[in-house]
Length: 459
Image 1: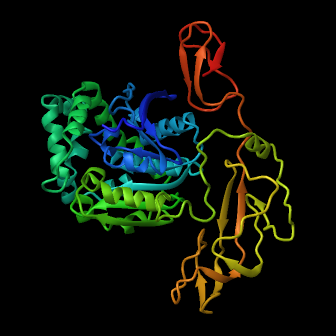
Image 2: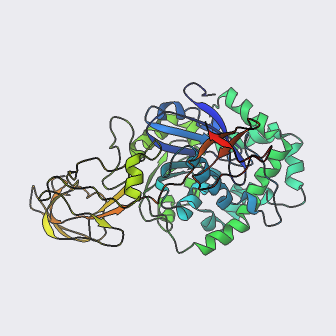
Image 3: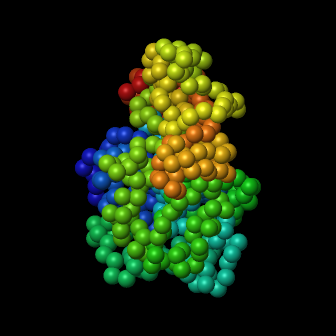
């Protein structure tokens, strides 16, 4: 569907084998699909985004051409926590310790769990046409039961939904696409053919039912346990104006109960945003994640995510060797995590870069945060009190300037842990030539699955 400029690989994680298409250069952007689709749902968006990001489009476990692990009585293998770990290990394999993520439908629920369980990995997140699972199950009424009947159908035991879907899986899938999209939506015939090919597999039907069974059981337990936690990274919420979510919920108000920094809008389409309104979706993702001519690369204080492995400078930083300023009188103070320096001084929304005798390693993360307090616009003199901390100061309501007199920002430097002996990647056994995928950096390699040898070399 969109193979040009993309590479297809299979990555073995600790719990599954993930089929993934990836391509492009720049900050890494992980795109997660929904039900009953595969990574192909991004075919109208990914080719544009690859001009601005390293785009990674996997099939979630149980979907598409990814493996379908055997489930358990508690459905944990298809929990969002298990799926989230797959994605963390996949991104580590591709060399990304932190990244952007956008998820649609089930993929958005995986993204939500990733942002809660791995806040240091997710720099910015986007969820499409969902509100949190916990909120939906805790606010069930007749309207919800009718509109989301499949949530209660797919969780039925003893193979009932598997059998009923399997009788005519092509009809079921096309009916889902038609029912959830806006009237007269035209899907690409090749995309539909690919969805049908994958959904004809009885193992896929069962695995996707397990996804929903997990949502109604073990996922709710995890959601209850983390209910007091909020998503801390900036969150973009997009949804279809002609869909169930828009008719049923005040979408942004709901998400503000689950995330600290939320923005979003309704698009003029149904449920399948990336296929019904791909131009707007691509524009919004470029704007929010910082790609394209009209968008900032990354907002003040956020990490510029590396696309390469850690350099020698990274290892030096991990060992605790600080950089030395050439001009101490002009250097801004740096503090380690948990400490801060604040003085009243003239400040701009974006602080000047610190002069050093060599660049800061890309894997070192700096968080710049302007504290709560009173500020004065440098241009027009209007005073304003900011009641929350900002990573980028908002424009003045009177003149639009972003330059203020006020407080110096808190600059927090987070350095990576010491690098492991063996980096993530593909290795080959020197005895039998079997290839072994190592999903994350490690100090000890596992023996070859085929012959048991420990003689492995990096490809």
